[in-house]
Length: 587
Image 1 (spheres, rainbow, N blue to C red):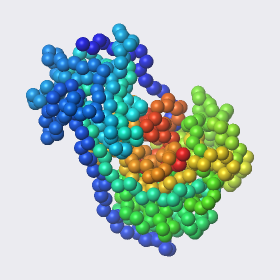
Image 2 (image 1 turned 90 degrees about the vertical axis):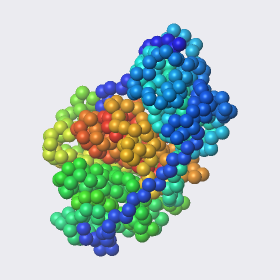
Image 3 (image 1 turned 60 degrees about the horizontal axis):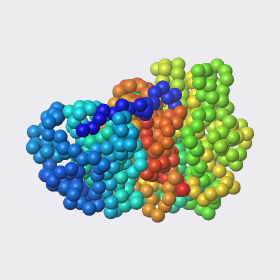
Image 4 (image 1 turned 45 degrees about the horizontal axis):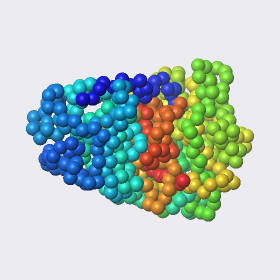
């Protein structure tokens, strides 16, 4: 019989700070159909402390009959305590639930061993793991760990049974390892599905060339750039020239760093950016939420063989694209990416000043943000990756980030609505000015926050990693029940800690960081999301900010891989979570 666990060091995090017609040489076409590219194949199902049993047309093998499987350290069968909820009507299911393996920290016995389940001989790949759990006596609070990474904080209830997961894990060394931290956990059975999905098309490795932000598309009649004609309509695809624009060379371009803004949306919808001449992927980059909404998001977009990118809009919206750099596949070694631990380098709020002293930035003001010397960034850094956040706005506003010492460009990074009090975040990759700084302009009063994510050097720095491998944007994680992949089914009650699948990494490459678009939807409240390397602490930074309940918000992120080649997501806002991966930086 298990003893009651008293959790004295639960992981609790609260109060983290917020972080139509075509242009010349372009065309608009109907959107291509979407396809489902993921297949689930049963790898194995196991009854961990009992005989083989058939459930829901799946045969759960007896653990004793599977040499590659070990589970323990403790075994128990309980025939007396009640299985209270949900109701169990299948004798086979009841028999399976009542016998289990368990382990975990016990306050009365510090020498007790944690739960340990291992399956050896597994091919390298991505798997979904489901676990059958029944709490027969005392409620528990614990961390469930797979491949060295905490995948969920669990709260069990006396008498309740449930299927945990499925959790998406990557097995690289031939053995799947499952354990627990703190509380004692009962596991009766386990099912493993192999995820089979085609590897996305990848571009050659490339290095970054920064540009002063420049507008290369504007579909609005009063300010047309590389476009002519009517407002892009429902299902329109607008082609955006990249090669030869704003200093971009004509060849060897693998991807473009752009800020995409949807303006004056007709109704709620989304915008997808992808390589021209390829099939539109089932992903999104920008998510207008209502008629008239203006919303931006940064993206690193693969460039097609014709030197262009394509923008699909589900519903009518004007589209703007500002380019701030590109990746080129030549012999150069400059422009390699060096991630840093997310570090706040600017916060203009009086209660949490960082790199600033003074009143709230006013309308038309500019704030200089030193970059060289911050978070270990050397004077040889040419560009910086940052998350920009504007908060406590009093009305409609535009924020523009650019290299210090250069004139403010016709570009934007953040767009705040007329409603006061909004918080909006967006990532940016920007050249660093000659004085080692960047500048932020705001058109209306608001507070500004900058979190550094990494930097790009001049080629003189040590090491050989940091090259970018662009890939076809691929949805690797989605918690929504109708399209779930790579995450346990949502929506999530805030706050939560998640480990989303990152999909298939480029073959034959060691990668250090992943580039992806993160979207939350059906949020129950205002709040934020922070992504960070698996196994490390939650940083004082944010990647995405939802302004209210019911929000759908997307934000690009670059996150260093941690334990198990994974990332963790602190989902403080709650609701659903979606990840679309668009590339990798080499180790």
